[in-house]
Length: 363
Image 1 (cartoon, helix red, strand yellow):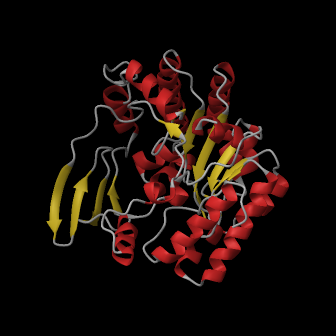
Image 2: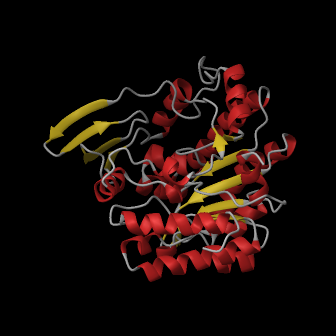
């Protein structure tokens, strides 16, 4: 079975030859983590994808689905180990030169309605030439050889996620109350942009997977109330769901960190059938989600923190994965990028055991 078809069929509950292995952000190390693993393994050429034979899953056609033309990346000032810079999205941030941690966000491109109107006209216009620079014969040959499914949508594109990136968390949350029409317009315009581009993509290749990046939860739950999610966001999700039905797109997924228990049932009502990464430290238990939502595709949900501890804790997560695999519609993975406190021995042991689970062997 081709890896892309296996990925889609697994998440939608159809028969498969085995479970996809090594798929998703729950298998990717931070740069510091990989550097540690290279030191501990004594192999500077270490590549986990080759080491364990991780599966392919989805190919992404070249689509500029956000700010285009991008802002010029500008160094604002050098602060020794840190730099302040403006990135291609127009966000000013302070970060380590080696990229070894999350940056501090300082400023954003949208502060007023005038900023938004200017950005819409200049950098969020679907008719700007070059938004889809894909060589389609080349792409079709690529997926023919790789067997990958075709995915549109990725970080940093989401109905809530992108406005948050354009305004900053505090400003966007206040704007729901002070200028709700601005938030509605941002969400509607962005969704229209994406649907316009995806329709063009669908004219050249079948789309299998739509991904929506939100990151709109913390440990306390959703950053906005379920009532606000329903009022502001779900009309746009309904438009995405209609597109998925029209073009027979089989998986519509959402990525949101934190406690997503308030969001999952709402999003499932409006066309979403897969969610990840289900962070354990935020209170998510994928076994409980499976009990409540038997038709939901789930990816991740294994506690990455065990990779810094005793082997018995790693084994416990493998047992959790095996239980989920038996129920179906589940792809094993840790609950976000692998942090630098994860030892190579623990990750290697977990990867080998989870490979056995995915291949239907005893771990």
